[in-house]
Amino acid sequence: MQDLLEICCGLDVHKETIVACLLKGSVNDDKPQKTIRTFSTLLPGLEELKAWLESENCRHVAMESTGVYWQPVYNIFENALDGTMVVIVANARHMKNVPGKKTDMKDAEWIATLLRAGLLNGSFIPPQTVRELRDLTRYRKSIIEELSSQKNRIEKYLQSCGFRLSNFLTDIFGVSGRAIINHIAEHGSITAEEVESYVKTRARNKLQEIKLSVNGRMNGHQRKFLRLLLKHLDETYEHLCEIEGDINSELEKFKRQIEQLDGIPGIDKTAAAAIIAEIGIDMSKFKTAEHICSWAGLSPGNNESAGKKKSTRVTKGNTYIKRILCEVAWSLTRVRDSYLATWYWKVKQRRGGKKAIVALARKLLVIIYNMLKNDTDYDEKGDLSRILCFQFIT
Image (cartoon, rainbow, N blue to C red; front, side, top):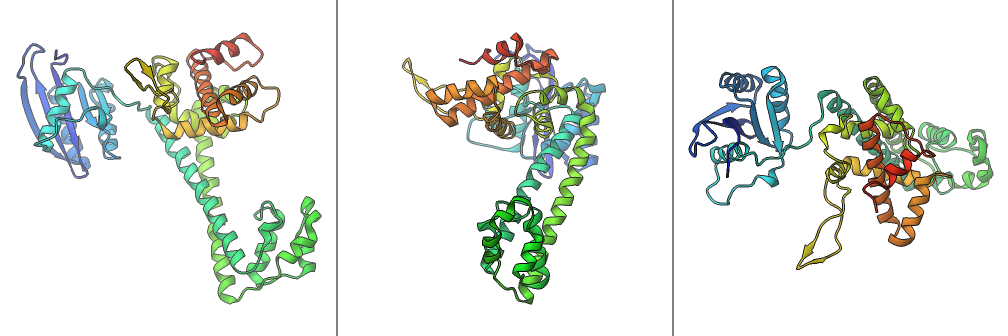
């Protein structure tokens, strides 16, 4: 294979050590000069590695995307050599060596050899501002899941104590339900008159059923345990509010892009923030809309043998953006007088609901890609919307 780089370095990154293999020599040299060194993953070791590569004028570095261990290494090199250093973080599945005598030094040399020949494709890594927003949006998602889990835990505990409030209230953590639960946590029981004073709005239509559903009684231990569960729920709510405040502060850097995405039916500010956090705002990182769909795992798989194409699943990709877009697609199907919703129902008749949702998620990503790339707004009634909707979609 033809070599393309005269100086390059392959890194085999581990939890405590980094093995670096530097290759130097003419592209026509079959045996370039090889230097292998080992560094610590602590900050002094990373600074030493950076200084060594800068002294060797090495402008191309590659490593595997091993867990989270590559991230501090990437952060150190991101602005090395005045930002001219090219750092490739490659998928480990795309750079496996021949099985056999495997060592850290051979792994580093193999990575450097592939890099020298130009055979490595880097993973998409957005700029630092986008990565910071991504940290917050992904953490917000985990906090919401924790809230849901805690609510289920409280509901289950109330059921075990004989309180069947969830049988008649759609949301037991609404105004009426939470007031009743707080009273039970303090006193262990609640009278029919007290229930009537707490129940508000439409919940009063089921007032008699609600009175019968809270005839249980709690002892001292049960009341204390319920208060602990409620305290944790409230603290999680406060934590979520803090995270959302930080997200709103970060979104000031992407105000124009958030406004663009917010104009698409089914996408609100929260969804727009999560989408920007995953794909960034620089669409030049993706050659075409087909490219970003493949990266997101929204492209049809390819399974062909002997000239016959077989049915297959969509490709694997970024699970976060795929989940966000599918959630948006579900909400979009309930939007009235929407071209995209109408398109979904037509596809559903032929392909089924789940496949139609994935197809709609892909269509949304194509629209978002073109809007960000061309700096245009979504116009459902205009020709632009129709062109973008049909592009790359059959």
